[in-house]
Length: 255
Image 1 (tube, rainbow, N blue to C red):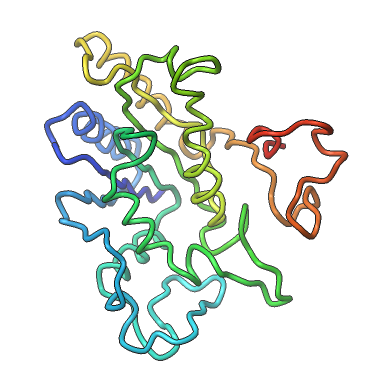
Image 2 (cartoon, rainbow, N blue to C red):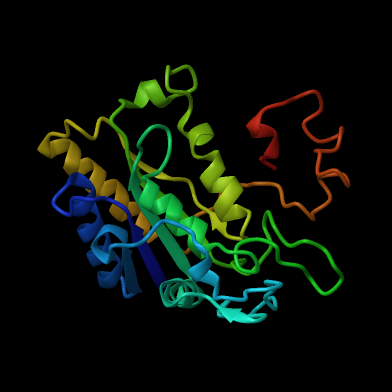
């Protein structure tokens, strides 16, 4: 497989950095090709501005199946965005690694998604019959994604009755609203809990867990999100009454 590892941590000597190094090495030992986007090392600019899209971006559209959103009507994307599109086009799977900060990802990673998942690439994609391709369909359909994160909270506090709320709910905007929205098959995350006080034996456990998950990166069962165009939703994109009848909440979007 071709694997893109997107890393968003300011300290390469951190727990996250050590896991990233071991993970990349593991993938290569397994015979996979790996490319990296180390956002802090790249000094990635997270701020969207007009220069990203050329002086006259006009109507931004992309033919489904194209490998890059470089060719926009009347303008071009900035070179750093094009480079990330080319990595994503090359990749069969994407690992997104970050520390959990304030219930979300670091701003630099949010800015990577904001600038890279542009209209016609991450969203605003239509099929020939006019259907909007999202939530299981789109330019990135057929690719896999897996989140690797470290959290300061202990595992029970990120469980179903924990004060922080369930980790799957915290990750729903990224898993469902970004990665799956753009068409990717999303694998269950790899989480390291209590990451600000990890003794050597816990690091070894986390390293071994990550290695095990990377060994099945191409075969593991993805999270069973319902696709938008698979018949589960009505014209207003509301789950039909006969699906999870009477239930509400994020879990109803699991098939």
